[in-house]
Image (tube, rainbow, N blue to C red; front, side, top):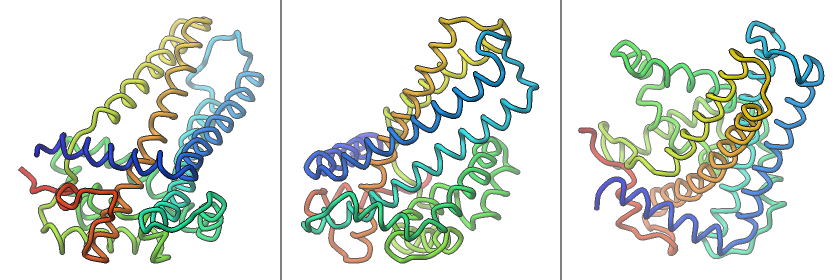
Amino acid sequence: MSAISRGWALKKQSWAVARAHRPLAFLSVLSAFSSLVGLVALWTAVALYTGVCGVVDPDNPVFWVATASTCFLTLFTGTFFNVALAACAARSLRGEDLTAVEGVATAIRLIGSVLGWTVTRGTVGVFLITARSSVLGREIEERITGATWDVAAFFVVPLITFEHIGPSSAQKRSTQLVTATWGEDANPAGIHLDDLVTTGLAVIGGAGYVFLTTQGFSVFWFAVTVVGVASAVLSSIITSALNVIFRVAVYLYLVTGQAPHAFDATVVRGAFERKQ
């Protein structure tokens, strides 16, 4: 099975779990709704403060603060509900009854770690994404995390949720789990179409924003920006929810030695592959 096929299989099995257990689907919708409400409230305030029909000035500090707040809000909301999802997903995969309230309560109890991972993901993650294209960037990445970012971050949410450790310890533990099972040159398998769709929608929203900043306000390009950004956020959160479910499944496989009944053991074992 190819990496892409394996990735799709994992997503399909995760989607089946989400559909079979309504609290998981509800948390996904609640995550998206909370994030979108926050973004609408934030950018409505910015629009009213700066003048909706005026030219968008990229040098205006208001827009930089709003953009940074958007990133933080999106990451925090995603992380918070991912922890809630992980708590519920583990129970569903064990065949236990669950409620969304229990998942949210778990995320609230772990709010410190949620905030810590939000900050880490938003600072280190963005830097590494921009630096990976260079050899120096990859060396800095491994110095910061002790492994590739994907490996160090893979089990962070399940580890925060189930082992109640902080982001830094979770990254180290994640690396240990991966390397002990798949080897030091392991790499998360698969490039998934849904991730590419999210990126494409974000690009559309970014193009609209660039047009607004260079050509002035236009109802059409404002609508393109709003729809593109909103769609990207929604797609990203749904994708993130499915990722959490299958990462919980892989985590349970590692700690119990058996794949959850809803997942194909062969596919779970293939969650990582050797670097080429």
